[in-house]
Length: 58
Image 1: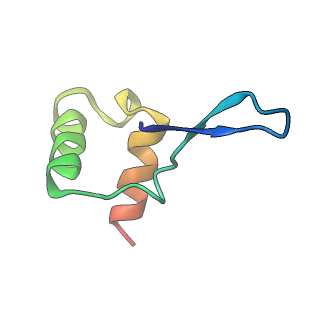
Image 2: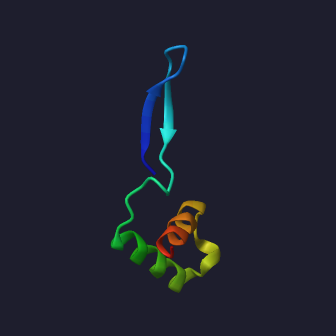
């Protein structure tokens, strides 16, 4: 997951994470997720991987 930094109202840096919906979805990402499912099953996926897979099926 990529992290972007921005300033809060008080001027302190804050980390903002990009969500799966804003990330570029590559064939390699999907292949990695499908390989993981094949080896370890759906239960082994992280929340981010599940989001990416859901986005790819739309």
